[in-house]
Structures are given as structure tokens and as C-alpha cells.
Image (cartoon, rainbow, N blue to C red):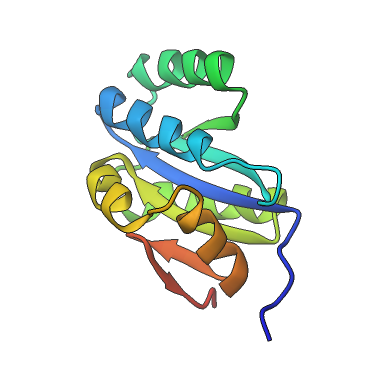
Length: 138
């Protein structure tokens, strides 16, 4: 039996000096929204607080698509600090979370067809998507 869809799914997106990739990821998430799917909340974690690119990108995409996006800064470099920061906030926002980064956008597009598949997969499994492969969130 398939578990019911949660009300919301939070997707944490880490970024470091790749505003163009971040924009593609956020627009891809916005395109996956639909009335039969959970509400999508994107949590963007900027791994260089001195870089204004992510803030401008978030504001532009939020304004043009209506996607719910929160922007956090994480000054500690590396993979783990921004993921941990994003995970902590995502857990506050939704019962189900996923991970992506702006470098995985092309992989996400190839594996997330038809539109909504990534969000549906994460929501149904009640776990998180790391590089678009669902895992149980432990």
C-alpha cells in the first residue's frame, strides 16, 4: 500500500558560486508543482555568504514562479556543513525532505520525468533524495 502524500516536501539545495545552475534547479522544482502534489519548499544554502548571486537568483525565481524559497548562509566550506544546515531547516518546514545541488541539475532532469516525479518519489518514500536516488531518512 502506498503511503499518503504529505502536505509538503522541503528540498535542500546547496550552492557555491553557481548561480546559473541554482536558477535551473529552482525553476525545475517550480515546474514540478501541481495540485495533486505536496507543496514544495526549497531551502537554498549558500556556502559563500559574500557571494550575492544566490540571493539575486532566489529573489528573481521566487518572484517569477511563486516557489516558496528560503535562503540560508553557511560560511563553513565543504559538503557537510551546508547539507546539515539545509537539513535542519528543511525538517522544520516539512515532514519529508530531499537534497539536491546545482551541479546535479542535468542528472535530476534525466531521472525526474515526467514532471513531478522527483517530488512524488521523495514524498511517497518519506525519505530524502540524494542525487535523485531515494533513501530512508535516518
